[in-house]
View 1 (cartoon, rainbow, N blue to C red):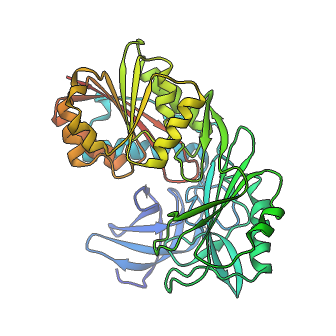
View 2: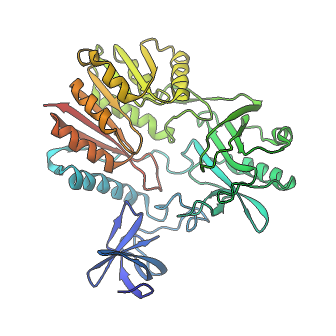
View 3: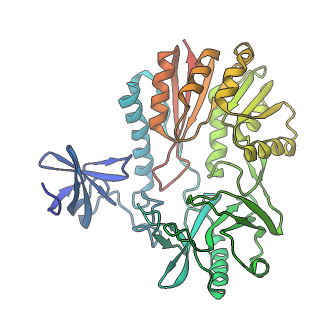
Length: 450
């Protein structure tokens, strides 16, 4: 098989890490984007490696029985909801399989040796996200506002409505588009690093429908007061952030509240959360409430425990568990997260939580006294998982129960292997679909010392 060869094949499997369907042509594995198990497709070979290749889809000759028409008109271009064309029941089945396969392949865990609970579906599969970062670009000389094109950091797709975000967002986006086009503002170019408009970040309090809108730009003259006056009624706060760094990320250097407040309040699982432009809360509040319930159910606290909440973010888990335990220590290296967590504790009158701004590794090393004080450690690390040094110090504390929350089954499996080698037993796995129509999955794992 050579680059450029055309072929017809049936998609036999789905490669989760590649977000591609998998076909075999004369025994050779080919990954094909935008395909699903059961599709019969025509494609051409784009790239060849030693043991596998990549192909581009030409035509779906016969669609899978599990394929459904995508709701989003830019589905085939946007890099977001890559599973939107798969019926929801099979989305969650794929995710469940990916979790089990990762544990088996990396941690050598046999499914029969662990209590693997059925995946929890999101109670809402459309308009569930409470935050989106849209990016500005230019097309045919006109400002567009949308998302990155799949596989590209410099090409963008103009998005009129994101069906996993908010029904109110299109009105706000149209207001901003019209404003930027009327003033003929330049957009930031990630190659030349020239231009003003960079991102539009929106956060929605699902319990009230109120929006926090943040316009992120490079230095430049903007009649921001004019934009503030044009904002729809649901916008509770408009901020203007200056970001001159070259990285394609929202890194604030200077913030200014233009209209209303710089925060909104949302209520999730009977907890009030103060949401600022940069505080971390679970993106799907509908599923987050279920996740908090599951965490409580799996831990089944007696009431006299001390809990260590590592990578605590804005304190959601700490706040939820504090009502049923003696004391909680929440640790996070982000100053904004700890400030939000502290404010949330005050907002909910939680007096038995102590939030600490520090590096998890350093805290675990310095506070060896926690070995006799802490009954349960909750671990909710970034996608990279727990660092080697942090894991080493965590293991030395010999905490009897660990509850690990992961958004990356691969790193969860890696860390599971390390914990098992160091005296822990994996008791239970609970997958939760926090991100319908995407390949992302949240997993709760419970470990106990042998």
